[in-house]
Length: 192
Image (cartoon, rainbow, N blue to C red):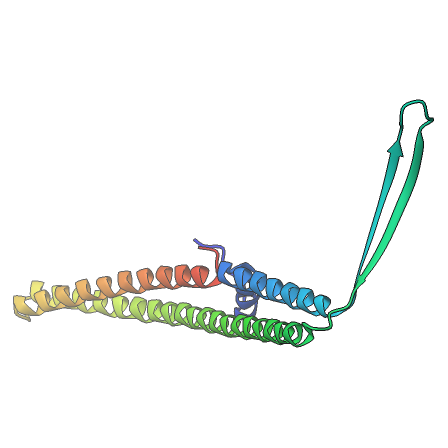
């Protein structure tokens, strides 16, 4: 019914790639890293280069042109402590976002593995419910024969029919739980 991975390892890998919350957190980590790099760059000396061309023409004179080139170097002297504090804060934000990413990855892995176990449990429940249904069908058949032969009261056949109905309901519930477990796995993987 669903396109499920072949193994829990594959399911975890797909989840770590596709979960939107992890993609968003990776973007936050990248943004924090860029903020840290910008803060570190502000501590270093900055060089600015500017160039311009002037052109002047006065009455009865020929046109004159000139070029101006300027180089300015900025060294943070008075704000060094403040800039270093900004770098430390940016490093702390990057570490915090990285830790949040790892925590989310662990949570996603846990959710996927639990959903995988739920699928396996539901599959085992289907097998058990199918065996119980076969037993209930046989018990109902035997009770019907005994009642028809006059060797058992009608209540025995009614009880066997109730057990058969209950076994059918359990099988339907097991199938439903199996499909729901598959859907939970896909949701945990970020595909649903």
